[in-house]
Image 1 (spheres, helix red, strand yellow):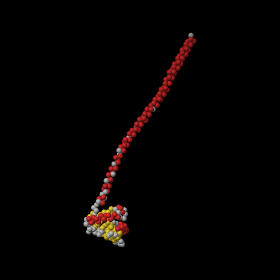
Image 2 (tube, one colour):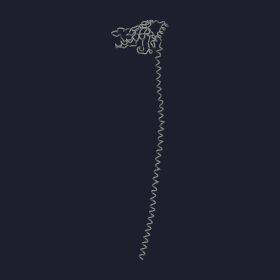
Image 3 (cartoon, one colour):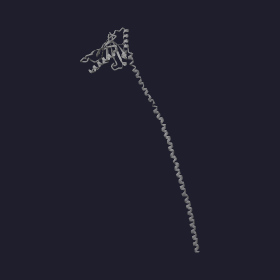
Image 4 (cartoon, helix red, strand yellow):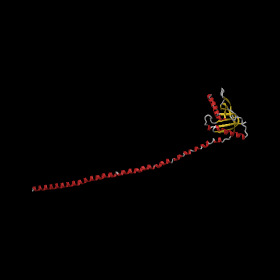
Length: 263
C-alpha cells in the first residue's frame, strides 16, 4: 500500500509541475505580448513630434506678411515727396522784382536835356594845354595823368571827379584846363605845367553824355540847337565833368556831364 501512495504522490507532484510549467509558459506568452506593444507605441509617438514640426514652420510663413507691412510703410515715404512744395523757393524769385528797381537809372537818361543848375566854385589843381579836335581826348587824358601823379606824390586826395574846362574853341582846336578838385590849395604851390585855380560858378545848363568821346559831337550839336531855340546866351566856355574815370573806363562806357554857364 505504501508504494502505491508514493506513486500517487509523485504523480500529483508531476501533474502540478506540468501545470506550473504550462502556467509559466502561458504567463510568459502573455507577458511578452504586452512588452512588444509598448515599443510599437513608441514609433507612433516619435512620428507625432515630426508631424508637430510642420506647425513651427507655419510661423515663418506668417512672417512674410509681417515683412509686407514695412512695404506698406512706403506710402509713409510719399509724404516727404509731398515736400515737393519746398519748390516754393521759386517764390523767392519774387526778389526778381528788384530788377525793375534797377531800371530806376533810366530816369537819369530821361532827365531834362538842359537842366537848370547853379555851379559852385571849387579849388582845382590843373594842367593847361591846347589840342586839335582829333586828339582831344588823348590830350585831356595826358593832362589828367600829370595832375593825378602830382596829387599822389603830395598825398592829396581829390574831393570830386576830374573835369575839363574849355576856355576857347575854334574850328581847328581848343584851349583847356584839365584838373581835379581838392579841399584846399597845396602848399607849396605846384610849378611847371601844373597850377591851382577855381572852377566856374553861377547859373548853367546841365547835360549828360553817355558813350564814346568821339560821339560827343552829336551831344554838342544838340546843345547848340537848344540854346538857339531858347535864345539863351552862353559864356565863352563850358565844362566837362567825368562821372566815370576817363583814365580807366572803356570808351563806350563813359558818362560825362556837360555844364554850359549862362551869361
